[in-house]
Length: 94
Image 1 (tube, rainbow, N blue to C red):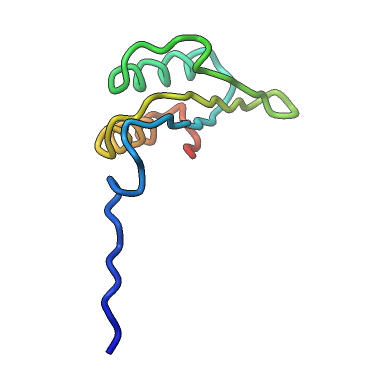
Image 2: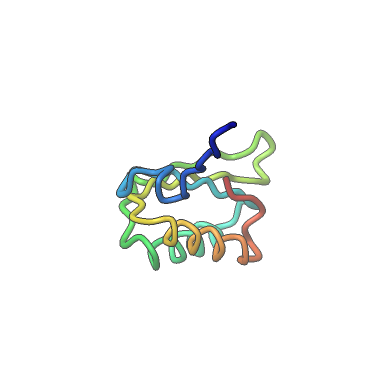
């Protein structure tokens, strides 16, 4: 007789609060940076410039941002991801 396996909840996978990188990609335009920061700040508080890094694509048409936040819960991360996914300037989120 095998024992049932217990899958950890999403809260158990992370040890909150924790450092968490959010990667956002889209066309290289100033509006993307402003929209992304506004969404993340709504859920995680004011961002400092040293929390944000960016890298342009080889042809310069696209840009990826990595924003490091202190995540406090799975609900917070889900809210940030959903708002970013719903924004028209955001192409991908990792």
